[in-house]
Image (cartoon, rainbow, N blue to C red):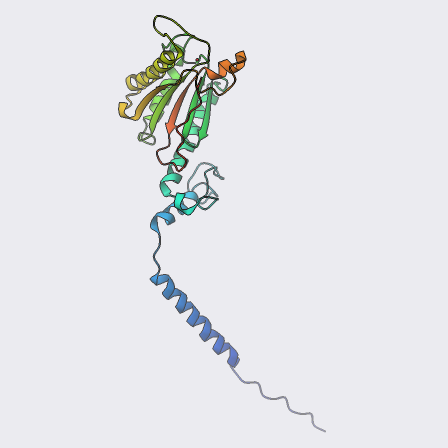
Length: 253
């Protein structure tokens, strides 16, 4: 007895595939139309692209992983701007340059660099810039101040605002020139500003000097080590674009 003949298969794609293909094409056209009608936030797009710079080695940058905050990393949308990201990256680059100079000249025990919410702090510890009770800039500190002045006056950082802060410990001073620590700290800050203007040709409008006396300590004044930490001069590269504007600096001779 002859076997039943296999039904003849139809040529071409199954009928359901034609329907599916039509549906996918219509969906694609629909989303293309939605995209065409939408508007792109150019500023946010630019900020996103900048945040990738150096973050994964995609674009030119220093480190393969950046410490700069990512655009959408726990930051409210209203606080996110390309200007913030650009300034953060700029201050990180400045921090690296200063730290490299400090390392090359073995000044780690004398100068510290910190990136805070309100700006980059270049901290001269104890009597690096001045002798005790004096506001005359020491000759041996001219090299690093000249380096900083020229660096801050370079094209990359020429628009940054600089604030110089003088701090003392709580040991009273009473001389003919400096009746209190207020005068001493203010005069020290002023002389650093004058040094930048006279030796690095910095524009005075970028600079300001503040004397905080003993009233912004960063350590206890109950020990010699704490008092030494409080005797300092801070050069602050101020953030001009800042969602957390913090003008507080911690002080001390």
